[in-house]
Image 1 (cartoon, rainbow, N blue to C red):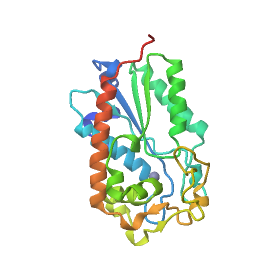
Image 2 (cartoon, protein in one colour):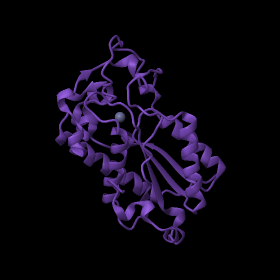
Image 3 (cartoon, rainbow, N blue to C red):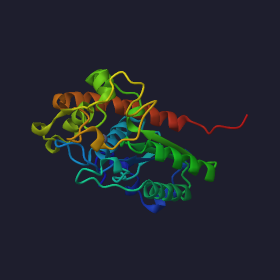
Image 4 (cartoon, rainbow, N blue to C red):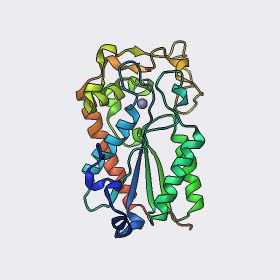
Length: 267
Ligand SMILES: [Zn+2]
């Protein structure tokens, strides 16, 4: 059941008595990987974002100092993916449902006396939702530290590995995700169907962007026929392995810093 998570770090392998007896509950990290089940082009399976979030958490926990108490929850496989709902197979929760599921999971973690919750999200369509609910949890329980984090915002080398242009423009099922999946689940990637596709008619030197500082709301049908935005044809397992190694190093560092972090105090 633990998939990429080291079994000794998999929270639901504990008994209730072990949870009740955790020695440093206020400073034990509880990590929730969050993904999606959504289309990723003709060559990748629906499970990409969940697989990547869970694998990165697992590899980072493998690298984390064993004396730091940290446990991963089972991944939340469903996310808010309605920008992909024009493609068969995408399963989406509403923003309200995703918020309710995570709020109630967090409430259960808090009730057990645990006070540091880390959300590690692999799907680009939902960081904003996690940020809003994390703030609501903080307001509700001032001694609860909640970190709403996106997997690709930890330090990593993906832009160097695939080139900065592909890194910025290949936002879905392109070189980064395809390479990582070739390394993680090679039998689930069909490179014979990999494509290179970018949005047509998007002004190249515009201040506006799909994501970033001055974005617009879009659905994947606005951008792509195949469901890919990026160049999946050049993906390799070796690139994926290098990206995974560096992003999991980054996450081991983030977990270490969250462990060391003490709550902000009014001056
Ligand atoms: Zn994805």
